[in-house]
Image (tube, rainbow over all chains, first blue to last red; front, side):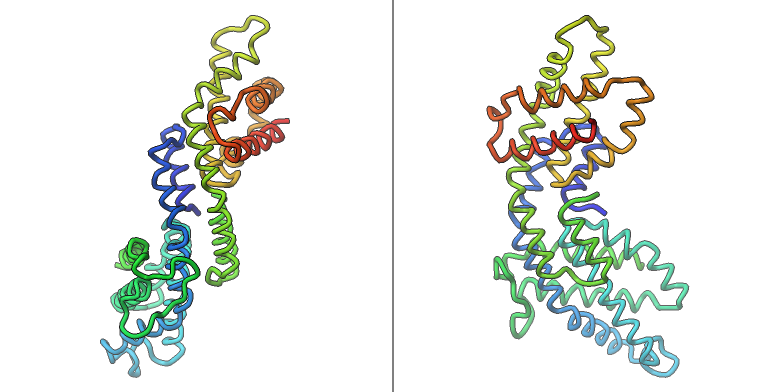
Length: 182
Length: 155
């Protein structure tokens, strides 16, 4: 597993070069933005159930057949598995966001996920839709552009407007999930 | 590769939980030290050749050696200093452990090389070179801590 720092090290080692000023600029930005990054991660961890439940509910509303007898979310045991998977994906996205690198998400969550879903008969098109909704909800909560109340309590920067860049990074991790399932 | 962040994430993943408040505190703690680390890494990168040559000259000052041997020694010292540069960036000993120390004893022994010469070179860098001239006190402390770690591993 890598983070922003060790990713720089691995690519420098491939060239056999020491890490000098220009490579350090990005890392200095990562360190300077640490508070925003922690706040953005908190935006996920404080709203896990809400984000996952909304996404699965949205997916079902768009395909009401899913919860009918014969549908993929029938009976409730399968619906519960769906909610659980939503939370697992959010957990790995939160790890990747904190580390500033996608390797943990790719190695420990996405590797083989599509094959598992195909083997279990899970329709990947519906799973992708749920991930899309989670992405939209997460970005909205992080940047405080959701309607209604502010949904997370940051410890540092406090304002969602400051999390714009990090929210874009979080969205890119959800895109990786979508890509892996497509 | 081991660093402050990956250690926290691995532990959280093993327990199947989201990162907790104490995880964030520990990550933040490592970022507070990051400024000195990154400065040390930057300055070391710019002085890498200088430090290497000074150390090798100090070790080779007495006696006549073939230039080819000396060149290989320069290469190795340079390699270890580069790994220290990586360790300063990650904030852990991962790069040294994985790429410099594991298997190193065996390689040095099979080539009948004296580890004492390497140790002497790194002790020279630690004690004789005025590191303070190129980097701040805190950065120097971070750099010397890793030099000590390497010297202990070689000894």
